[in-house]
Length: 214
Image 1 (cartoon, helix red, strand yellow):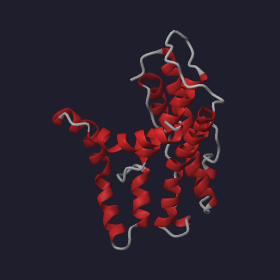
Image 2 (cartoon, rainbow, N blue to C red):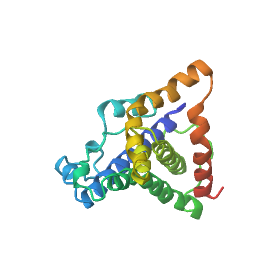
Image 3 (cartoon, one colour):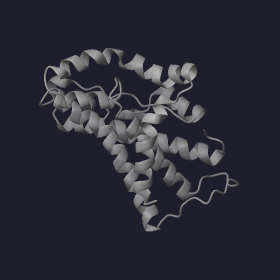
């Protein structure tokens, strides 16, 4: 929960940066694998305006979370079929982990100081901005690797399943959005169980501590 102006600013900056890099990674890998669609639609760029979804962007600044505009990919251009799609899908979460590590290195090296917890400032400190960028990118990477459509993890897993399991898994993914919504909203509301948190918190905590050397 964002409570202060510095937290709001650092969270918004971190989300915009994370979403831009995530979607650019999808686009550039698809482009390199031979799909002209992302380049034709102007997605092979690090310009945030090309990747931010209008509603998702508004929610970043209103609620502290959001999403980007999905990159359109034509599997017919990709080598290996579902394997090619798996590479494109994996590029997004992996780019977020790489970005998190890039911001973790100065903190580990002492070039940037860890935040002190001073909430009197109007702007976030460099350390607060860095740790927020690291956390948000790890969060997006882990969340997107859940193997449920429309998340990237569903395409990554499908690309490495042997036939005919990949086909059966693909058919199951039509229910992915409903399952995901149930896990995020219905299970906590009716059963008072944070199932999503139970799934993603351990790897997020481990990656965060490992990157920062805590």
